[in-house]
Image (tube, rainbow, N blue to C red):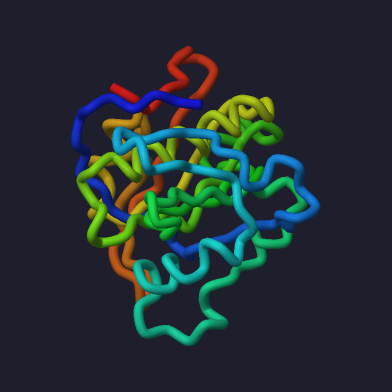
Length: 199
């Protein structure tokens, strides 16, 4: 379980493509077990099946798009892990997925790089620490799985959020068709020795 500080972060969404799960909750003994708690004691973050992330991802990352544009190939990756933050009423207010994938600009981390996708925070819960605790659950999972690097294609509006969490930008901003401006970002989880997104 991670502890979040009382700081309020600017939160946004990330992932050039939205994302997903890859593990059926009923077959996964870790599914449904809280892995993080946010400043709001009623808010929990738990590992979930991809389907639990779809409604929020569709609303935040793909507004107006057909439902078939929400799932991605990463949903079926055997090592993917999806996470959801739920409020006291059980409503999903933050989501993300992570899975092993080589970082295109950091080839020396080939076998230990993980890609973050589909990170989204409910519009009503931004700037309340939800994104920070979801990201911490993701980082904790990657570290526990032996990962050395986590990377993503972040929406430019979320760049400061990721920078405060220890990510650095790589390359130039590009425009992802039908989604908007993105920047590649990564965080080294080994050489810095920093494994917490809480400040």
